[in-house]
Image (tube, rainbow, N blue to C red; front, side):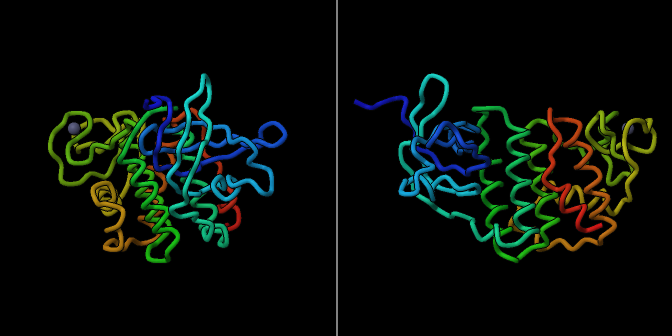
Length: 249
Ligand SMILES: [Zn+2]
């Protein structure tokens, strides 16, 4: 007989917490179940087979059992532990930020294959040195906003729907560009260069980002837009990047 409460899925560990004497609570962002919380029995024992499997950022194939309130981890296999990300402060901060964003933006059991794929690809690219970290993060932020219902309209005016080639204003209540005729309220002025870069970032897949080369100013403008959208649309504000900003200033 097949047990319907056992699931096998790929997942990334976005958060962990000690639980009782020897157990751990682990928040997984999974491909098939969305965000879930699982208890891992005996995970804190030094000889536990779960020790390596339940480190933050670990990406693996996991088998979980669905209980009344929580899932229980049964088995797992590491696909990439991404522990190399922990050796570099920038990488550590950015990867923690990705996990924090998923935690903040996704409700339990809300499934998005696209977002899951983007998270894994972004972690892979972050672990290589192939790309500008900031671009990678901005691209992830925009895709996260889209996957969670806050897609930016950039090809049409977000108010009157007229087709536009570029704009110099992003409305934060209509989620998109505003044409020359429509009122510019509750939003941000941005350069046309930043507007076009934003559109490019939204439409291009993460692994093609190397084609994009942006100035520091344009990157800062884009960051302003994504930061605003993220801090206003989700219940909690992410904190992971604060330390990095503090160090850089
Ligand atoms: Zn308009």
